[in-house]
Length: 289
Image (tube, rainbow, N blue to C red; front, side, top):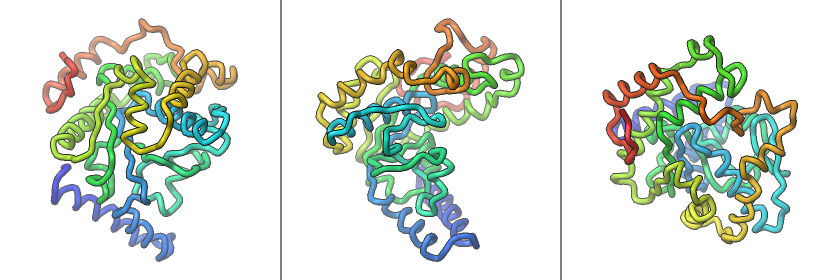
């Protein structure tokens, strides 16, 4: 699905949806077509498995860029989005960006200010862009076990406190399938894409300053390492918790309050193992089973 003609076929169908819509002007449709080919002149892509710290990473880089530009780096949580005084500096990579819809659908209406990267949880072949081969792509992986566990504990009626009903309603098979699809798609891409970097979530946590400094240099963001150091020192879990109002603590999903001993049911781990054994092609060095 990553290769010609399959990906281009799906891309064409998506673009076709734009051109048959009656609620868009001809100019909007034309802008969508241009965006498909040039990605709005933004050539940095951050592709991450879900629950692998993407919002934390992007927040740190945004604060660092703000400090480098003479700002104060102050941030807060608003409608499940970490933002600075001007909003956020990234976009979800979506082919509908020129219509304006993506601003509401993917950033909860938070203002966008001079974005320096796109972010996506999608595998390569689900991203509708002809510019992907020319982009600088950072890929972040996390153990599928840990990603699923984090997602399960965050998506319950009360985050960090799932009950039996949450366990029954959680879309285990499709979400495990999504994670495997992400691994397999990007595992194929790094074999032939000219400009990819791969990091593991554990590596980023162990050395956030140097890893994010590497990312910033790769993306040509022109951020001094000292600003990156100051930024990530300001967003430790303890300092982020201070930013969360008591009224938001129960329902927010950005910072975990769950016990380190909390785990998904054993039989769900067996389900993950079975699906991995049947479908996973590229494991990126993780051990499963």
